[in-house]
Image (cartoon, rainbow, N blue to C red; front, side, top):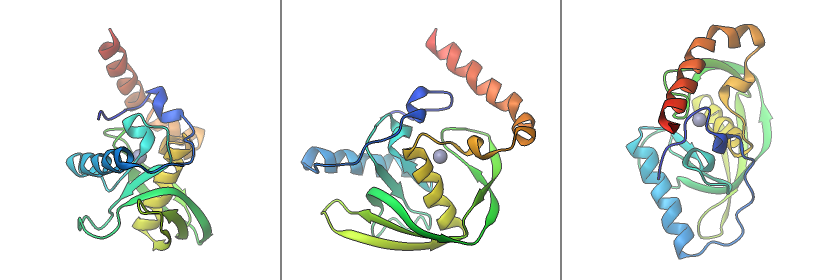
Length: 168
Ligand SMILES: [Zn+2]
C-alpha cells in the first residue's frame, strides 16, 4: 500500500459502496488499518491508499482496540457547529480550520456484516466528517474560502512540484 498525496487524482474519486466481503477484502481492510497506524494517522479513507470502495479506518483515541474498520459509513444526523484545525496524511504540512458539525451520528457496517450506529463529538466528530469527505473525493482544502486558500497556496504548490518531480 502506498499513501496518495495531493494532487494525486485518486483522492478525487467518489467511492462506491462495498458489496461483497470475502477473505481477501477482510485482509486488505486490515492492512489499511495497520497502514494507518504506521503513518500515525487517526483515520484513513480508501482513496488515500488508491482504493475506490467505501472503507474508513478510524481510531481517534489510538487505543488499538474495539471496532476500527467501517464499511459504507453515512452520517444520519448532525448538530452544532465548530471550526478546529485539521491536518491530513495526504496533505503533509498543511493544517487548516475546517467548519464541521459538533456532533454526528454515523451508521456503518462492520466486516462481519453487523450494522452499527456510532455517536461522536468534538475531535471524533471532525474525524468522521473528514474521512467521509474523502470517500466523496473531498479534501480539507475544499472547505476553505478563497481568501484562506491564498494563505496556503505556496504549500500546495510545493506539494504539486514534489509530485511532478516524482513522475519524471
Ligand atoms: Zn485526510
